[in-house]
Amino acid sequence: MRVLITGGGPTGLTLAIDLARRGVEVRVVDKADGFFRGSRADTIQPRTLEVFDDLGVVDAVLAAGSLPPAYRVHLDGHTVEERRMAELRAPRPDQPYPNPWTLGQAQLEKILRSRLADFGTRVESAMELTGLEQDEHAVTAYFGTGEIERFDYLVGADGGSSTVRKAIGAAFHGTTDETFRLVIGDVYAPDLDPTIGHWFAAATSPMTGVVMTPLPGTDMFQLNTPIGMDDDASLTTMQTVLDGFSAGVHLSGCHWSTVWRPNVRLAERFRVGRVFLAGDAAHVHPPTGGQGMNTSVQDAYNLGWKLAAETKLDSYETERRAVAATALKTSDDLLRLYAAGRAEAHKRGEEHLGLHISYRPQSATGALAPGDRAPDALVRDSTGKQIRLFDLFRGPHATRLVFGASAPDADHSYAVLRPGDDPTDFGRYVIDIDGNAFAAYSAYTASADGHVLIRPDGHLAY
Ligand SMILES: Cc1cc2nc3c(=O)[nH]c(=O)nc-3n(C[C@H](O)[C@H](O)[C@H](O)COP(=O)(O)OP(=O)(O)OC[C@H]3O[C@@H](n4cnc5c(N)ncnc54)[C@H](O)[C@@H]3O)c2cc1C
Image 1 (spheres, rainbow, N blue to C red):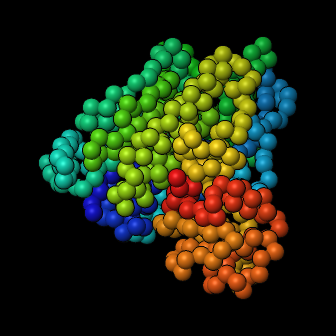
Image 2: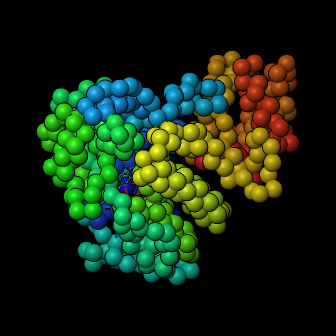
Image 3: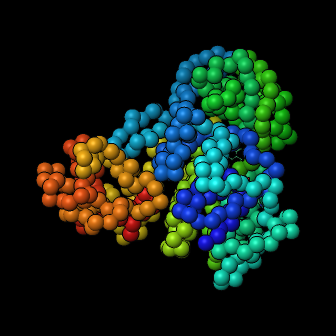
């Protein structure tokens, strides 16, 4: 099977890794001459870290990034307090990555490209998709170079102004708000303490100001602030806003910057025949809440195993369009609070973490139900060594857990002992959930009649 991925951003790279590790022949093209160099999305949510664990990049991501910083609040040039957007959470057996992780998007993309290269695949830069046609057997792709090639499937991971989305005629419903503008820039501020984030505002309006987040692995901050209708994304604009708050901060340079307008849209279709849309091509979000890139990566992860096996392809749109609609609402609500200078815009609840995302059919009930994310748990293998359920799930396969009975002698099929069961009765594949994980045991067994099938993307099959 041959798949064309249009776009080498986080979505295209994630999908390419997932397909390549399944032995699918994949071509990744990007119209840009060089790789994107800005921080853009600087927050990787816990569920995305779990995806990266499965794809073999989580150690590199954790090494390159850092926990979200606390912010020092400066009002009219006076430091008044330090605060966090969300309290840090301790790891739990079912949630090994409990907190978001800060890392600039350009650095994340570099890590993903390096992982993709492990499979012998590289992003082809300066290769623009200009058009496509499809019939029931294949998709024909037309490139700016004049090249024409046929593929079994084509995935449009080509961002908000997707050529693929336009080519398949999928409407992109939503709104663009021309009355609110933000500048986002990666800047140098050599006199500012880089071990913490900073918030600058006026005492009379403390919730509208400039946020500066240190970018791990660099000597830059990501600066983010509302600007006027006539302002541009220049260093002068950013310096002027800071000076207006008596910040006393000198910006010595700018690596990348952009003006962002609220553009909140959801594609009507995520699939037409052999062509799929994923990531920003299918939904664009406000940066508030850090959902855009995370939802995009998770689209790719939902699609990869289905495409490789040519199975359940219709469920991609059903499952991911619903998730994207919810994420859009969350980030749009936050943006409105932010624009109104409300304190709630600076607080993060658990809904941002992505751990509760579920593809539950409407009929499903219970604490853990088919469609839900399969939680991690600490378990012991048949040699008595402690491992995690995620160690068993990791890889391109599905995993079968059989509770309280011997499992079929098949790859990735494990018998799980009930607390107190004798391991000798259960054959070779024995997992002994120890006392600490009893809650996980109860949740899993309550969800099914002794058998649980975990899909390759870590959700309980339904
Ligand atoms: C200023 C800003 C701040 C953001 N902040 C956050 C945040 O804090 N948290 C968060 O989660 N998200 C954030 N986002 C959103 C996040 O950056 C996107 O959701 C993410 O980049 C989507 O990834 P993608 O791979 O789908 O698309 P993109 O990263 O846009 O990649 C698409 C790629 O397709 C290529 N391409 C386009 N057309 C063609 C074509 N015809 N042929 C070949 N290649 C093509 C482009 O060159 C590009 O490289 C932010 C976005 C912006 C703009």
